[in-house]
Length: 161
Image (cartoon, rainbow, N blue to C red; front, side, top):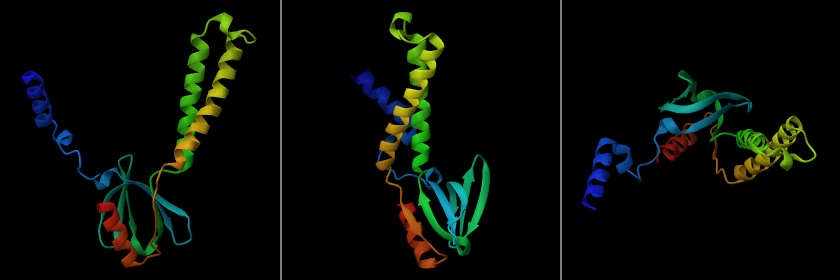
């Protein structure tokens, strides 16, 4: 028992992230979508920095700065379509894997290729349905900024917590 305790302490010492269970999420892990005053998307990515008049977004090692005067609204997290697409992709993979691993007798009305096609499409359908259901519980937040510095301060405080 003492050995297990020593191993746990050693792991926490080597990886300090494990010992801060209640630490808030850092800014660079928050994904946002930024829209201009005409409600057109002008930027997406993880927050790199925020100051009094600029938000910096990082996406695939490309940085982009957006000014407060150009920002109409900001939405956190990715869209519901992302959940649906990921669900369909996973469902297709599961359906195809089931069709490939099934015995010939299990595929009674289908040939092997037909079974892969049918199981892949049905897996995509059910996976997209599950992705749509999970999108309901996504809890993304929306902030209307419209270039207002008071609303900007509220946004900064809410993502900094």
